[in-house]
Length: 180
Image 1: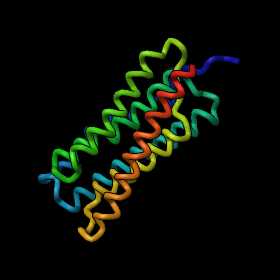
Image 2: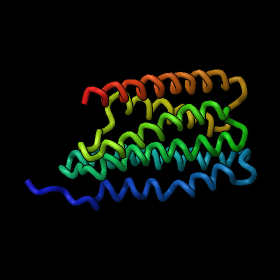
Image 3: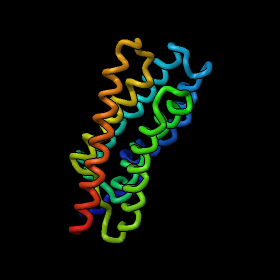
Image 4: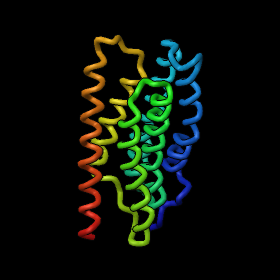
């Protein structure tokens, strides 16, 4: 069977996801970062960019174009998307810095570990990692949206669950790596 090209449609979509992040940040900070209209625009753009994660993965699997480059790049693009929003929200004072630091430290740490062990083959994201990405993405999305203050408790609980899943999956990943 012929090896799929590294620069295929799914990987190109992933690269476009990364390239769109400055635009996402721009809309998040537009008019001082607390303009409800621009926050909704930013949410939609983050949402659309985030949905490309499902599109590129589905395309790669259905076309038999899963590549080592794509398995490495896709989770990096996910982390960059969530990281862009979290850092922006923390800079705006809307998300506590401790959440941003805990989640991004785990994400950067796991990414470094992936790069170190790449000679043994890329370790693809597992189900727990995908759930973590989904929960933290939704949690961050609730912070981007201009919610009424009465809904902050639900937004915060969602994000705290995301933090717990992030820590658990990080530990699980490191444990699985030791068995390799």
